[in-house]
Image 1 (cartoon, rainbow, N blue to C red):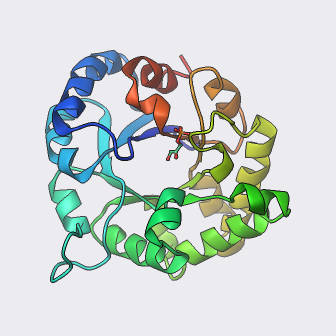
Image 2 (cartoon, rainbow, N blue to C red; image 1 turned 90 degrees about the horizontal axis):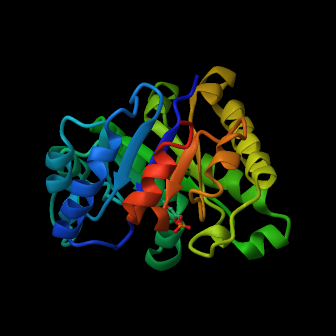
Length: 253
Ligand code: 13P
C-alpha cells in the first residue's frame, strides 16, 4: 500500500535561524509518530537545507528543496544543482510548482529536465500538477493535468517512478482558503492515476503517490485523506505553524 506523505512547502518563508527555532518546537512532537505509517517532509529555502537536515538527523523528518537546476555544474550564476542539494542532506525536491510556472517561466520541458537531473542523484521528485481557475471553468482540468503529467514525465523510465511523487495542486485552491472538495480532489486524483496507468501500467500507477495541495489544514485533512486516491498533502501555510503541521502529520492518529 502507498504510505501517506505529509510534506510541507515553506515557499519563501523563514530565515535559517527561524527554521531551526521551528524544528526545536516541532521535532519533539514527532516522537511516537511511526515513520512506517507516515512519511513527513519539509521543503525549505536552499539556504536553510543543510542546517535543517543536520538538526533533524535521527528523527523521521526529511528535508527537501523547492527547486533545482538541471545542469550538474558550471557557469549558471545563481542556480543550485541536485548534487548540492543531496550533499546538504536533502532527500527530495519539489519541482514545477504553479508559482514557478507563473512567476519564473517554468514549463513541462524545464520541469522534465529538472526531474531527469535530480533522479540521477537519487533524490525524490515531488512533481506538481494542476489547473488554474480559468482552465477549470473552461472544463479543461483533466486535459491540463494530463498534459502536465505526460510532459513532466517524458522519457522517465518505469523503474524511476519509485522516486517520483505527484502533487495535484489546483491553482485556485493555493493560499486562498478555498479547498477542493474531497469529491473534486478524488476525481482528479483518480484521473491522474489513470493517466499514470496509461503511461506505465497499473502496477506502477497503483504504487505511485499522489498528494493533494491547496489550503489543506487541520480541519479538512481527514476528509481529504479519506479519498482513496489521495496519498498525502503538500502543505503551504499550515506547515509554517508547528501546531497545525503536527495535526496534519497526526491526521490518522
Ligand atoms: P497553501 O497550503 O498555503 O494553500 O499552499 C499550498 C501549496 O502551494 C503547497 O505547495
